[in-house]
Length: 249
Image (cartoon, rainbow, N blue to C red):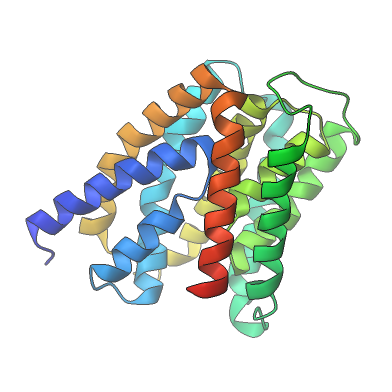
């Protein structure tokens, strides 16, 4: 049984993580260390993190959708492919060597940070897409969903950069669409974690309460300030995740 004060602290961590995740992704960088510090075994920490983050991501997705920043109908095929990719990744993760990702992913995250830092035309305005949205977003969803199933860090950053670079979305719309696919990949992982009994429910529910508020406030903040806030926060979160993976794996 977890101490009530610890649960209160975890709820506060969930609020902060939900806020950051709703704008730029990377909330797990805050919540997973907190869960490990609370004494949860690694698998239980990962499962509990997925459970609590689903709540915040659902709230953020709903808030972006209500404000018109999520192309729900166009994303339905991508939702199905993202779910399938993430589920496949989670099922085969124990059978493949993912050690190479501990170097490749930080390099990719730093590249994303540099792009968001120096690209001159990043704004909330949509641009001409390089690839057809309806045909290739499901492909992106399947590939990044698979990555999320086997490893995970940076999933939100990879989706956001894909929506911006490949499909011409403005940053706020890219963030909204990212939230829906990120939610889908997390639900796929929970399809495995929940029946296995890996979720520590008192911790998950305490953090979920904070995630509800954090996801809503973060989404509203991202919508209000748009690219002025999303752009620097993506840079900071991507670099922070890269440094964590390189030096504190």
